[in-house]
Length: 390
Image (cartoon, rainbow, N blue to C red; front, side, top):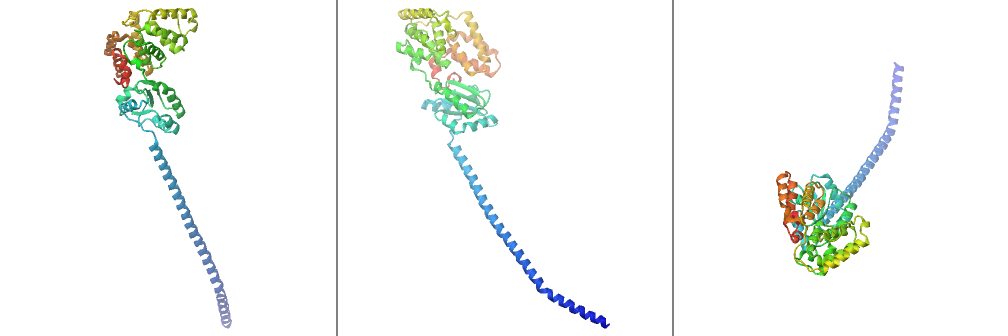
């Protein structure tokens, strides 16, 4: 028992001493832990606030960039060239300013059209279109105008003179550099105005005849054939100028002059500008002597138009069929201008074909040909939008 008590007291003393001796150390550890935790938490809080400030600043910077981009986009959109949405508005501005017309056709659902819009929005494209009257035709809205322009696929472009005469056409999307090249190529032709001598009637003087002969170098078939018809009744005035130009001009001009010389029954049977070896000095001298003799002949007020024989009518029928099958608007207009010299004699054939065809496109082309056969050159050259618009 004593031992027991002794051990008990000893245990108690030992236990108590041990317990009391460790209390200060535990407190120090606790305090240190508290300090570490507090410091860590404080660092995290400070870091979190710093991150929040950084994120806030970054968000502000991003928002400012977005706002700037939107502002730049809005300014860019605002600075883009404006487009008329009807041909009538375009014709009005063109007649007032004398500028050529660029017609663009597309639709909201057309993917290539949207891509083309991006190309046209580039500064280089915008710059080259500055001096043009611009017309955009939505084929789902401006259906009549699109039809008048012969739009069969989109995107499509048409170049018109200030009076609405079609000069060039192309279909499909193209990059900005190709678009600029194409538009620049057609600009000089689009700006070409019908000379006043072509719009006059009666016998031209010598100066006017020389100017008209120069017009035979025109790319536009309407102007070219109108010039031929204007000069055909007056070989006495224009023969010398025509022969002189024939000897000095290039192939395209020679071909047009040759057609005029054939109307005059000039001695050109064995001459072919496609074969330069046929244009011998002897033949050219003979042609020159013919022109001198013709100029001395008493002028006649009667038109010198070729007789329309069965072979010519057969060829005309073939050309009419080509106008219905031709995929090119330019080719169609060229054929129509060439057939115009036959005048009303072709009307029965055209009327019969109008009764036979079953497509709107064919009827449209035949109706345009019908108008051209009876219209004067002056009307065709001055009517805004040309035969198609009429």
